[in-house]
Length: 381
Image 1: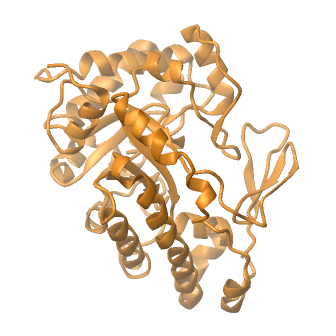
Image 2: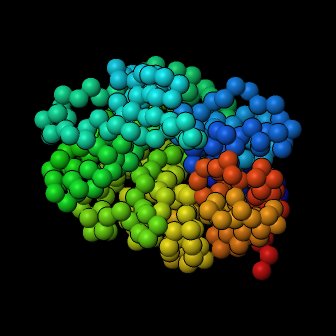
């Protein structure tokens, strides 16, 4: 029996086999196309795109047009609150901006996207944390009309994917600078902990206000913290468990009390050593399953060891296959990941992170088409 896209997603995330593997493309920054690659894709599809919209302007993550989502067969639709109330945000030029948190982003003439160039708390002390002009994350203006949009997505039969902006470690890296923050974890644990507590104290009431509006209409709640590198986590599992895990557990636990939506947690890199911990803190759906990063490449093993407790979103290689393979190579890659990750449900097909402009648009179309064909249950073999 054919299911609606929303039913398909919910079935898979409840570790049951739907009619076919659901597909996420254009549902978040991590599952969309980088700005310069969007026009070739719309041309391939014969779609006239509207004015450029972004999940993130600095990162050039495209908010896809509805017709493109329909043509590609995406089973989810994104929603996001409006911008926070901030005295720090400003546009300096077409290639330089300061975001809500005071982080400066610049785009070099030869670059596709902006790079973070100034971390406002790089030289801060603990005393500075109380004086900093933090954005007002729970400003009511952010949520106007959000519940109506979320309900309309569900009424249309799609899964509502809520882009929360909730992150602790990743936001800390932007405010402090990754190099400085990693040194803090060794040389100044007090500052590191105080910064994470401050961010958590901002995120908790914001998440509560957000979910008061749309918790009932949220199917997937997007959050994350980039914790991995190619070889393994940025910090030892012991350090993660001591300095980060308790804060993530408190934050995700509070979120789960306000919505039945599944927690989508984005972390690039090889986070195999942390998967049990992420399950402990409440993660339901891991993204992007970066198969080019160490132990994450053995997707059959991931499914075997964690598949009863964790769902997976992503896994379709964007380092080699999507940019450099043929459409037939892409179809083989899709079949491989479905074979490994989809038995018994628990898999949402997607590319590993945002598709770059060097990915031929015919490969994107091939990926989406093959999910619809090869992902039909019962799976072969």
